[in-house]
Image 1 (tube, rainbow, N blue to C red):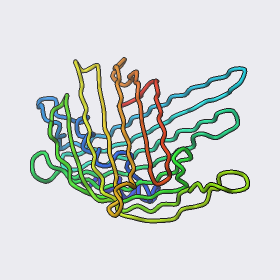
Image 2: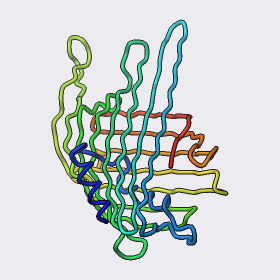
Image 3: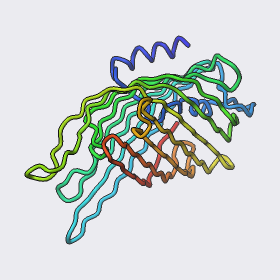
Length: 271
């Protein structure tokens, strides 16, 4: 626990306004450090440090169009028996001809506490997002809540979590009817959201891994104002530290009437 607290005080100054990409997914990290002699995903007394990096890119050059997209994600985790901390950063950048389509950055800090009833845990998170594709200039979130492992095995995890999130937004709002078409202005607001999250993790023969997750964050005062994210991934382990991965992500934000979809293929380096 002391190592967790030490790393927390190191990370907070670096990213004081971090975020969770997937609120409540900190419990998924517990499966990585599972006891080899047990079928439970709860980890041992020993502290485990893990990292995961994935980088992909697409380039398309024709007579009429030039486009490219690059995606990078880095996750650092420190796990102990009663607690876990995870620090995640992702960046997607893309252009089509000379038009910027993606410059999307997310930084997340997640904390999980497991000293509670069996299969229950508590999560806390802080999150920062900036996204051209979702018309988010800056967005900060902080929240907490409980979670429960419906399936808690080394090779299979299914969890649900619920919580409350405070959100502060600086958004681009599109207004129609201007002399040059759309007019974009800043939309400043803050609200509380309910966050519901579902995640599964399934490993077959120690080589094939399937991951899926999704969360929806509804405004407490207006449920038509929501953020939705769906994730799916499949990976084939090539080496102990290297895997071939295909993944898809869908995001929707009704406040800015925007959505994006990203499908990637590439290599994942992990430990």
